[in-house]
Length: 175
Image (cartoon, rainbow, N blue to C red; front, side, top):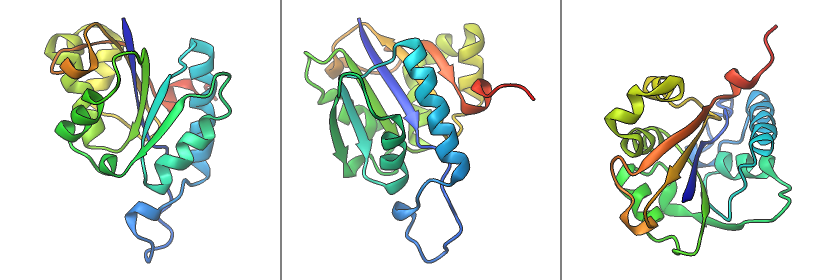
């Protein structure tokens, strides 16, 4: 059984209108949310062998917030993940070596949400609280954890079983 972790970048800053979208950094809320997700990933033992990450500043900063790792994964920054659609995301995953057990893909919406919904399939979204929450959206900083039965190159619609869907808001202590 393989594991696929889909992480949307944390909340980014919009305070400088002159900055290109690709160059927007995380804001304070985003840095806090990424730290929350780091703790949750460690508590659940979610440790990737490989990280595929968009080259946008906000995705790279989200990755940095997850470090340090106990066992450092292979990190592959990929230009083609920037604002990628579901087909581009699947193509990147299809290229993962068969020996890789766990992949973390850090990217952007709407493609990341569409990929998660596609992998879960219609039945996966109807089962359990995690599927219902995923069907509603994929907020910044959210993480979807899938169990994948087949090889990476065959990954397609309905090819994942949703294990967890975590959002920074769901992990923050109630006031």
